Amino acid sequence: MTAHRPFLGALPYGVRDLFLEEAARLSSLEDTWRRLFETWAYVRVIPPTYEHYDVLLTGSGMEMEEQVFRVLDREGNILALRPDLTTQVARIVGTKLFDLPLPLRFYYVASVFRFNEPQAGREREFRQAGVELIGASTADADAEVLALTIEALRGAGLPEFQLNVGHLGLFRALIAEARLAPTLVDDVRAALNRKDAEGLAEAVGRAGLSGPIADALQSLPTLCGGPEVLEAAAALSRHPSAHAAIERLQAVRGLLELRGMLGHVIFDLGETRGMDYYTGIAFEGFCPGLGFPIASGGRYDELIGRFGQARPAVGVALSTERILLALNGNGRRNLTRPDLLAATAVARERSAQIEALRQRGWRVEADVLERSEGDLRALATQRGIPNLALEATSERVRLVSPQGESWLAWSDLPGRPA
Amino acid sequence: MLCVAMPKGRLFRPAAELFAALGCRSVQALAEGRRLIHEEPEAGFRFVLVKPIDVPTYVEYGAADLGIVGQDVLREFERDLYEPLRLGFGGCRLVVAGPPALRATDWARRPILRVASKYPRLARQYFLDRGLSIEIVTLAGSVELAPQAGLADLIVDVVDSGRTLAANGLVEIETILLSQACLVVNRASHKLHLARINAMIEQMRKA
Image 1 (cartoon, rainbow over the protein chains, first blue to last red):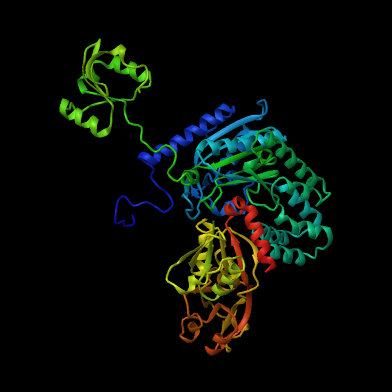
Image 2 (cartoon, rainbow over the protein chains, first blue to last red):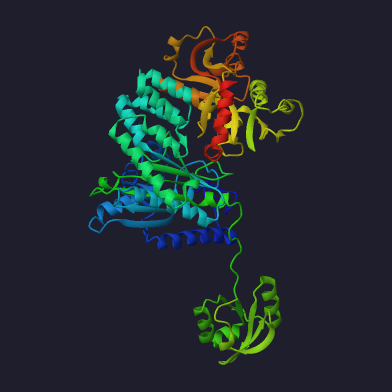
């Protein structure tokens, strides 16, 4: 039995149609990103939309489990619509591409699905564009992904944005040094993620910590700002992985400075957000007027190893609809209109000439309704189509153009449309 | 200019005093007129006046950069915000209360308890964590009335002095949460106005 719906066009909550100008804006942005990623030598990967639930959720953590769309197939397998593509890329690399020379560079432009409240332009189905750089654990690899993120946000036309760069190594080293029980780790982490200094002091107190380790944990929320916070952080712990984390951020800072990109970066050592699979740097992008992150990424050196040969990797995902929303209607929004409208007879009898124009990049719309000359002229005016081919021989065409109306040789038409 | 979501009601006056100390001379005006927006261009703040439970929403979406709100509301709605400063005012407790005759030992023997609250999430979590089946009745106000009116066995609500509870024949049974007012900050605003917001927090801490 089907539930009664008042209207056949009803939509479920959390999805939307994109058409005309909005669809054009989204594809134009994604085209820009595809070209950018390809000039950085990333190649496209197209994983399936759904997979086995447990495979897709490998390493993602509890928070993601709650957000995933689950589906049962007829054999009773639990499937899930992908909530991100990083795990899929990790599976592909770990199980199928383990013998390719490293590093590998993949990009994707795809829809993902999360059972969230729609927020800030992002529905339950939304678009992500991202890159994964696999097989390099260097600071240069981290810096490449950060720099590419900055280029992608610039390329989108965002005038102002910032990347908030942290590193999970320092927090994890302090937790290890403090030998905290898991429930206390959750308390500390929750207070830290809220930058709640007093809440953090309480949690540290409840854990019975005191001395340098307590001071170090409590100073984390203040370690947010320019490169000077890295200096301050270096003094906090002598734990080797804390040391490695700060050294890595220093190196990344130096590489971004060489690229002149430090103005877009702040360092935040009090952030422990992000996917559970992150092991090194972790970052998020923000821009004015939008309260939510527009990009998020990080290093995940242990995820691919769950599927096969271990490989270090770092990547980022851009939140396409949020960036479109932040552009606030800026960016290309005109629909591409045809360059030429061809009367039915012209299109039918001179298809070779029409095809030659299309080969040269002309957008040619063929009338298929045998409209009269008057109707064609009215239609071209109404739709803003600059050229109208009313009749033609194999040599010449009677063309209405912004220059007026005349018989022209096909070969005299410009190589590319104006 | 930073936009601040100010809570209507009992938190408004101390919150306004906090910003008055930062040079916003006439924030109080928001309480008097009908306008819901007030600007202090010299101090660089704009204020919007909203219901306390809407403060986290305004701030999470970035419609306001900052807000003042109680921890009771923050924990009920769990929005993704920074809470860098507790403000020391607006102290209250979120408690379980009920008629004196209903003792805690009786709860577990009831097949199901009905609990009235403005905090359905916190109330549900509290009872379920203790293995008690409950039915939550979500109300928008006058929660103390529910047991007398036969709508619920217990209530979960905030108390300040406890006088309203007593006047309605209820006693506090257990405290779920101690709450006070907090400064909350949108995550993007925090990054984009880091120096200014940090300086403001320092000023508030000293005040």
